[in-house]
Image (tube, rainbow, N blue to C red; front, side, top):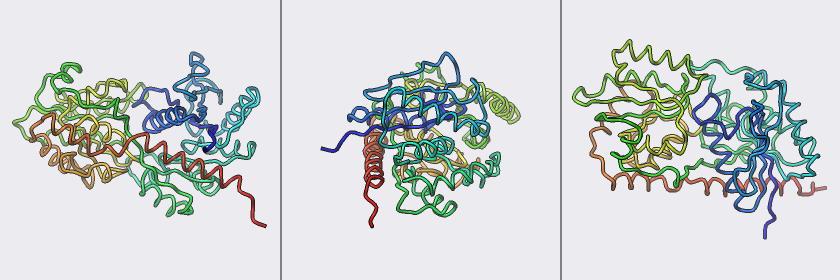
Length: 409
């Protein structure tokens, strides 16, 4: 019987229990919560360390068997920019080490999420003499290829490249991410393991469309949905441009779910943009939606659109498909792996409004029925968090074995 592991996860800048769709809370947080909980149920011990932002945050949060979230200080309370947070990473790592010593703990490995956590993980790796696995989730070098995005600092790119060569293994969500790591950071291909993300099939499931629409208060004809963070990288303005290009005979509305107080300037810009196109009455912003409520929004929609310029994987299309709602997504992240049948929707080469509108119109012209919803849901049954957790655990065991193996003389 294989021994049970004690795993330290680092999610320094983003609390996995934060509200999804906010400034720094997205697919990475879902990965951490889902995988850590599954590992805990399998008998492993997982401590997730994150920076405390508010004194009201509970110091330790149990979120599953053998899985807990531990808040520790790094710099002042409140929001700190990612670049500023870099300077406090040694303090954060020191606080993790103090917590370990005070509680007489020992960890078998470190799994860091994002480049900032990776830097803290590198410090702890030296102190603990254990293997260090990194998941970047997004790559600065890829974001810098996009004109819509603020340039990522050289510090991020340099740190990502250094971590690529300094860690034991890297987990990438897609083959594209692995290729980028090899091409731009000269990663050793054998040290990068591609493991797709999953979807919680119990949480995301089809709901009768009329029931779902009553639940969210929608009484129109056709509903197009966007779910995610509200930022330029998501291409929401391109989707708004596509709405007036849809067939005039259909009462098509666009509902945008996501965003918090930090998204207010972008939300205001998008509202003004919709107003300039004369469609302000057809576009509504619902703000942050609790994850357990999202199944009603996905099920109420006729199509969920993800017009992103860049995604490391793209969880929202998976969630929509699990609810039986087809999608239209740009060819980023795992889009082509997820959408493999015409019933599931379409992958478009870019987010040009005309391209989006043409495919959205094709989906809107389809009849809706429960059988089709189940067919769509079945098409992504292989993408579940159990598979992600088991595959990632194999990498963890491989790292522990590699790190403890005697060096040949």
